[in-house]
Image (cartoon, rainbow, N blue to C red; front, top):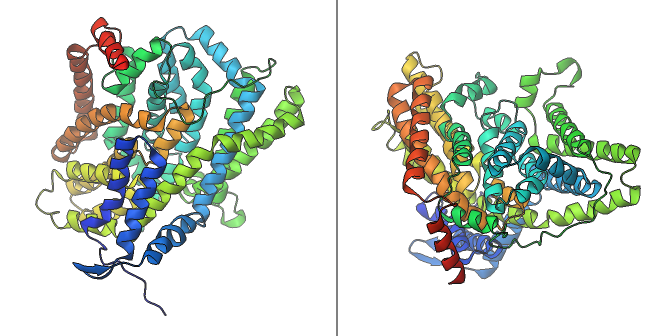
Length: 537
């Protein structure tokens, strides 16, 4: 039997070079496709090095094999990843159908009649995002499709819409017990531990997710924007919703005038129901004599497969609904299949490249390097370990662009350091706090990373330039991360969910009030003058 190949840089700091190359290039060039591919190429070079450091040599053919055969092609033969791509295509078709039938336009008109302010439209977007908690991909594309007409009418920039979508995707899913994220996290629970119960225990300690929701509401209510987002919001008020145009033009499509709000609401409700049914089906809920209860089935579900089943069920439901209501002909319905697929081409390309980059980083042993880094110092800072784990999870998730991969690396390490069944209740509580810090940090890094699938989907859902979304969202995410870090420092000593969370909320409210006092708002004449000057320059 042939021994598994181990790169000579395996488990070293060089394993983090490929994602860092991709991220730095993306931020410099503002172009995501080539940046990620160069990162993959750098990973292929490191993977293919032969000899012993520092005396190494390289075969170009080995690099091509690592990049394409063991990289891109290998990722696209993974059933779960293919399932995600099929789910995205189905979602694209559903969005195209709702737009073609006039459901989105009807909802936009209805919302415009009932939502009369920028604050109201932002709060409505947050509310809808919180309601769609099943899956972050589903959240991103559905909220984007539904709320674009509403936020456009209130002259809210696409960058701000993308932020609201992104901040109600992963941060909501990671505190929702009935979600694909809960199922993923529960897989890492040690034997004999109820994974969903562990997930529920971490919710009060998931400061980044909870404080992100609070921050969105405060930003909307107090009309505060800062960083690059302020310029985007000023431009939106002056009629330019994009500032930086997305790669796909946001063209007006011909829609049916007979479309009503029900033509959007019913498909969304049906989609949620079918997705839940699809996920618990894959988890064994309908397994006959050996069927599982709802919680067990959700914990054991396959999110990509279940969501694909649910999306297909949603398409069938929409077909019957629209044909019965006679708002779309069968021919018009079928034309939306091509339109939906085309709309998803850009996200699919970026996702494929991002997955390949993550796989390359994994082959180079980035997880082993991080594990060694954490375990080497585990005994020296036990009470500040939650804050340290939060930072490490942020960095790892940012570099690799994956929350779930970060869970897989750090949660087992954390549970090796602390036991959930430790007879000392303080240490058992600290274990829960540290697991929550893993999850919160992973979501934070995912939120910031330009190669994150959720960040990519948020850009697609808002039809916003991807790098514009990343650059405008970053200051907000870092603000919340800083407050969360301080809260985890406190939680490590206090070990009380209620006290720590109240302190975190006070810190977040205080931070927003301070920023409101010291920073000019998008309505201020000075900031508008600076923005116009920068635009002309």
